Length: 203
Image 1 (cartoon, rainbow, N blue to C red):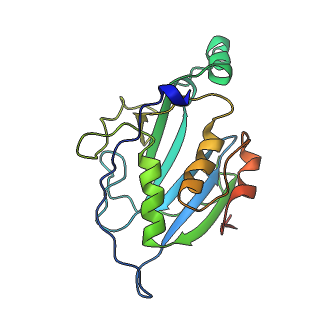
Image 2 (cartoon, helix red, strand yellow; image 1 turned 45 degrees about the vertical axis):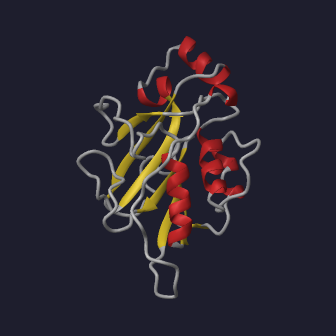
Image 3 (cartoon, rainbow, N blue to C red; image 1 turned 60 degrees about the vertical axis):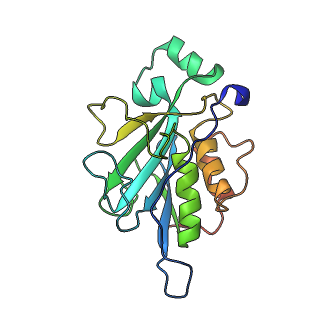
């Protein structure tokens, strides 16, 4: 459905320190949940990527998936059929974390690495490009809040279908920033770790 996908809009981000031996480095995490993966970045000081009310969160999570299943928790058979076999609307989920992710509760795996400011910027641009942007390069408005979610959902730019699911999305976003191999044929969570570059198991 690439032909029907709106083009990525510009992403406006604050400047980061120029590359040097003293320049700060940032942590990036790939988190494996029950069947789903997401990306968590260490947010640079003065950036405001966290969800409404927690924009300056120390760590910011990005997850992507089918709108009906991921956001609306619609598990009716006809909805699940559409999620798997038909192109459906997607959402981007953004949440703020106080501390780095750890293996506990629903978090089953954590992989981590450090990146340069340039690498972080490239990753954030491809993550933020998953949603429509305003003319000024900002985010479009968030969707209505979900009661059992601390973060916020945003309308996704791309369609969801089983060969282009949340795990493929995770790998493709990292690949666009030079942090993973291509996500071709990635479908399930267990395939993600083998595509990562420079990440170490951290749980």
